[in-house]
Length: 115
Length: 211
Image (cartoon, rainbow over all chains, first blue to last red; front, side, top):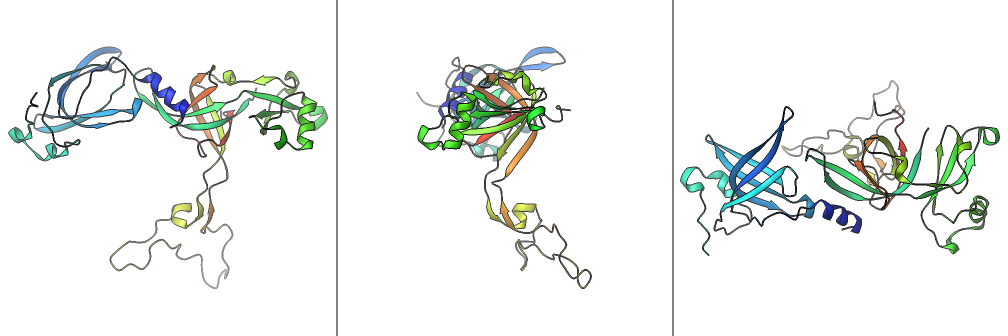
């Protein structure tokens, strides 16, 4: 990639981020501006996909809300993200956990990663 | 006053806006340019300035061009472009033009040479619908009927046909300036602009004033 673009992207990258992996159950604290007011919303779910690309990096979090599957794509370096908490690490065998979309209830769980 | 600057398209990326939103941007290395010629109403019948941009080896410049640069007392430049300004008398020969003529949030028009697509069919070149791909269809991407019968017994002018596409001068209007970086001569424009990475682009202020 071009040096100029690389350096532009580097400037935007945050260095206060923790390592997150596919299969982790996370709490994403997201800043939301609503009617001039700012508040923090927490989105809890499993990371099913990470897309690399420097400052353009994203991760997708899936959760089931009132019986409906919800997926949210977060830009990793977005200033809107206050913090990401890792609640547990899942044992996974692939990088894209799309198979979770077809599973409901107890089957849509991941085994805890053994240390 | 109308204004403009020459630059090189570096590529595209994205930046985060004030509210954390993602803005797609094209990065342009613009300027610094120098004024190489001043055209006045008295002498030339219209008011404009000519600007030069880009380094060039001395042996690549021919004699007429060398004379032209010598007259303006500037270094040899690779590219020249003319920009119409209201009062060209205010400019001086050799005066540098940098990107600080643009500010954040301003609307600009960008001129570039679009990527060449070669000999393209009507589906790609003109957006024809084409026919069905399957179910025994023998009509896929052909142009179809090109006109009527005995009246007028000719093909009307301007009929859309296959042919050479791209590699032409294209202007896109009302491109917003997202950021101006003075030290590195970088201009970040919102969205895409015509041309390949590394190609020459001319950035002018918006004709329509961004309305």
